[in-house]
Every structure is written in structure tokens, then in C-alpha cells.
Length: 256
Image (cartoon, rainbow, N blue to C red; front, side, top):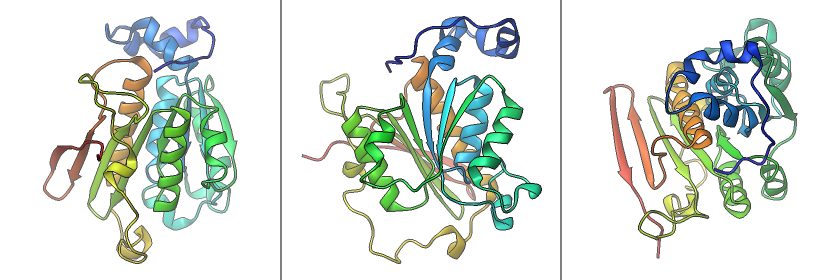
């Protein structure tokens, strides 16, 4: 993944803060500088966005963009752990920014307090190196995926419901090792399900810790993409069944 931000040295405080990263040969000082230079857009400061934002800020990602137009409600607190009881009634952007700066004052927060749509998504996505989708509706997911594909930005996508979750990485603007174009979100989900078929979290319920599992996996995939380590979940979807404590991985391809 190409990061366009200019290099900047790590301060003594940052060297100590990220010491456990820097001693990893796979990351080291060079990888930590990539994290510092990275600009990551997170869609939503809710159940998935909360652990994503917390771990990316703690990891030293230099700029975190957050798009969310909602306020904190009491029912959010069971899973949206970036917010707390005194934050009820505040905008999620305000609450999340305060929490993230307490975690890491070196991280710059760019709040976007409006709803992402197919019309405005590409201009926003183009401002960042990487996008992590924590949205909870298909309209936003398609808009984000299409915008990332058009702008050539990697997308870490995830979804959760009740006791199950899934995560994948989308880079349809690149080809795999065999020269085959990588699949897109629309290859995985050609069209949204009929209205009312997939109940919302408010209707069906969800275990709060599930969003922590999947959101943390999203943060890990983002760190891999930024630093260039490991094998991201491109062309693979990781499925998690919390009740069975089971992970399964399925491969998928571009439709012909």
C-alpha cells in the first residue's frame, strides 16, 4: 500500500510508546513510521468502529478520519466501548475524539459529521490511504466499496449480527499473484438482500463482545496493509461463530 505522507522521525516519547512494535522485526522503526504517516478513514464510531479506532490510535496511526452523524445513546454502551456513560447525548464524533486523544495524543482526528452516500463517498475516500468499514447498513456498504474501488483504496470490510461476524479485505483495483483481478464487494454480494430480510441489531440483538472480536480483527488487517506484513484477507472471507468458538475461511473470486 502506497502512503503519500512525507516521512517524519519518531520522537523519544513515540519510541517508548511503540517499543513493543519496534522490536518486532516485521514492523520495526520503518513500519512504525508507515503507521505514523498513514491516513485511515473509519466508517462509523459504533460497535465495530470503536475497537478499530482504539487499536489504530494506540498503534500510532497518524491520522484517523471518522464519519458518523449519530449521537451516543444508553443502548450503545453495551458494545460501543469507545463511549462511556457521561457521553450519552453527545455526538459520537465528539465522544470518540476525546477518547482517542486520551489514548494517544500523537494521533490526529479528522471528524466528518454527515452521512456517507454514493454521491459524496468517493471524494471523501480519496483523501485517505485506507478505509475500514464499520457501517451497519447495505446502502453505506455498497457506497463505500464502490468508492474505494474507484479511488484505488484498500477496504477492510466487516459485518456482525447476533453471535456471528465476517471480515474480508477488498482490493479489486489490483491483481492476485496469478494475474487474476481481485474480487470486489459486488462479486461477494452482487446485490443487497430484500428489505426486511436481514434484521438490524436493534431488532435481532447482538452480543457486545462480538463487535470487539471482529473490530479488533479489522484493526489487525489495517495494520498489516499499512506496514506490508503478512497476508491480508484479499479474496478470502473469515467467518466467526461465537457460540461454537469457531473460525472458518472461505475463498471467493471475481465473477466472470
